[in-house]
Length: 370
Image: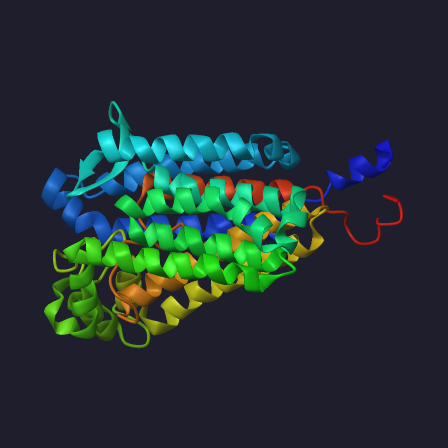
């Protein structure tokens, strides 16, 4: 590739993806203020308490995203193994010195700053799987080779599952999704899936509250949070009560500004507004698919596939929980729910996507890049 072709690869930028990301972030901040103002005023005497914290994190995340968008993502291949080791160390530390929050030990703390390693594991697994499926693709042609690639992933997902089963399931789906896209022998994934299902059953039976959630899913009237969310969705009707007019957010829905924020969206903006936001997510995923198809190499394409799977799975799981399609579990709605580590890592992922898009050769210039 000559100097001119390298220059042309840096001239493209997917502004549509950037705009959709910023739009979802801005919408999330508006809904976060609406959903959290009552509890923030009650608990802290400041109705903008959660909004202000999320705004600072979002601004920092946008800066990180734009900075990463200029990074030459191919260099990540050199660090994928090191990142996996780092993830393992952080997840082990959580088991021993994790910060308690509502009875869960999922965070590491440094002074007033807390960080959730399981969220970082999602991005690290995307990078690792894209790397091994690119540089060691020959291993995927045999069962033994597949197991050699799989065991580090099983270790990381297992460590995540000890403290956060729902995140572990999302991590596993990301891994299997990338694997399915990359492997010529998808049947070799079956033994890994069997191990995953057995692992889920083990962790569900290991903690009684996880079994209680399944019971509550079967009988939603026994779950206060689920019923309040359903009341919120039902009272919104077609067009909603109006922005800021939710009744259920006033102390009735636990975590109304976090995991359950979709129910507030339905109540205030109605089914039409909620469907519109879901369509924005669909449009964003479609744009990411175009970037994956146009990526200059397999490594970049698989990274974008991992981000697509992460976004799609997390949106589907969050909406399914709120509407009681699946048992209750703590999964945030991307770019909208309150949560520092989650949104920062999402911005990092989008930064990688934009970095990959920068190396796409625009149509009409392919002949120059030969």
